[in-house]
Image (cartoon, rainbow, N blue to C red; front, top):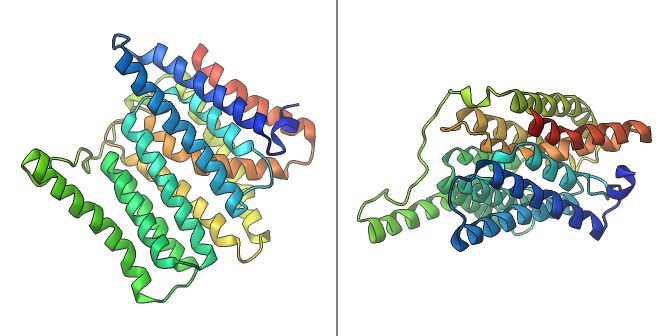
Length: 307
């Protein structure tokens, strides 16, 4: 039944995902919120919710525009379930905004495939990554995706390699200018700095360990089929699939380097993971096994809540 609902792109799918995302925010705020309920707080949470849901819509646009999956909505279902499974990802304002800007950058990076307006796309991608880094510094690692994209498309034009750096410099210059104007210092506006922490003690809870273990098992298993499937794709589409693979690697690197391990950093992994697992689901020929696979992922958030 679940596979039949999401096997085709339909408006009802977005409504269901909307309610799953809303449920994730509701439960997370009941579980983690320690602030008194005020109108200002409610408005802040509503804004964060729509930033998160806009990220889901953006994910769907990226996937459909670049043919990363077949005509289905498994990826947005998985993304919303991941939010429900790791509730902390809905609570960190900086992570939510940074992830949204990374998705904007990913959209531009994948669109390089068309080989039109390259200068603008390269600048935009670097610009959005730099904005994301202002909210969460280590997202600057996603800049590597631009370099990988240029390598995959064997672009040897010098200006195409220089333009992404101008995007980063532009954001840096404007941020320094804003710092001088509002904080009377060069770096007052830089709220996220390059700190590194290897303290993983926050992850040491039964429910979270189970959730991450299952996600990683499902993800790594799907990754095996994903990498095999890339070779069967049309030559023009292969770079896009490879870029998603590199995005997954960059997301893991961000998680490892995160200055504060509070589980919210796993949000950066949800987009590539949802795409990779969706590609695996599409290879499953037996409908009953597809159902079992999806039901396991649907039940996962409730396992975390009970433990």
